Length: 401
Image 1: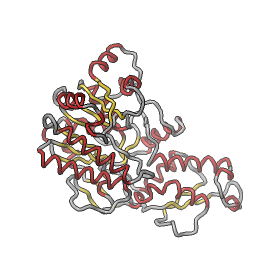
Image 2: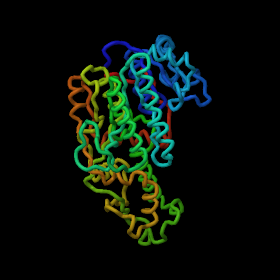
Image 3: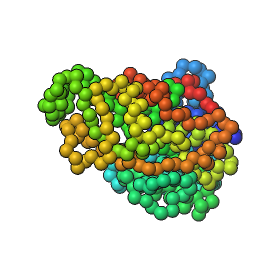
Image 4: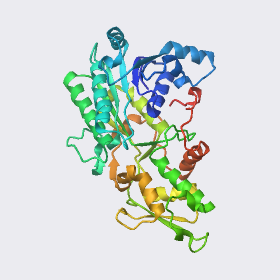
């Protein structure tokens, strides 16, 4: 935890990870300045994003006294604030947690990604260096490593790799910008690189249903259609899919390398680890992989999902590259809906987590293993909420390590 109470500017506090980080900082007694994008909603209408409608008067009073919602825009000059408000905010801020980013790498244009992920970061760096040099905490991603093979260390990536998508490249450039700017201007910094974030390991709670959840939802729906024999639900489903009878097993070939490590980390671990590391003086000017030191392989994860989702009569075969093969309609459907994540199913990346593990030694914080029980918890939550975004867990239910 941070060593003493400070005033902290947090960007991206309405996002999944940013919100969880802000909750922990608030619960630790710090005063927060939450820079929320000015999109037409008033500050008062988003006050409860941390306290979640809590009726405890003491918590409500603490929130009102220690959290200020500021409408602005990280891509604008002076963060979209007028000059007086900007310099007041600079003078009052002790540290910056920059969590805001465009993370949807499927449909975003390169200029949008660069404007938000790089341009916004540049603006926050200037903010951190305006009145006095305040510590800059930057939320990057483990996948700034791009399409490398082997072990990726917790250090600056000198040579730009090939990337799987424009999102990775924008975060790589932003991270390089952070390192260059802070070193040139002697601004203290810490960079955190989370891997693939999933729901809470204790409750299953999530606000995002991408990555792992997309695959799970497709498999769940395939199971339901198979059980109910509702062939019409799959456009173009071959007439001979059940040609040997409704009880015939079907095989679905999916792309990937069976040995590919799929690096999943629960949101509670990521937020707990970041806040714990952020308060240690010796972690200044360092990079930390907030990743799973023992990730499951794709084949293992396939077996876990088959068990958890109780998929019977559907065999999932990991076949490597399948795009040029003759595919069934259901295989084409699976491929089309998961194409965004296709390359990650072949990845050979392993993230060295020694900096993180050393920093967390003695804190009681460790990455939960991706077990059948944990995946079942995550899937039960997702299915019970129909794979949709839901209200976050109330503040008083968040355990602070």
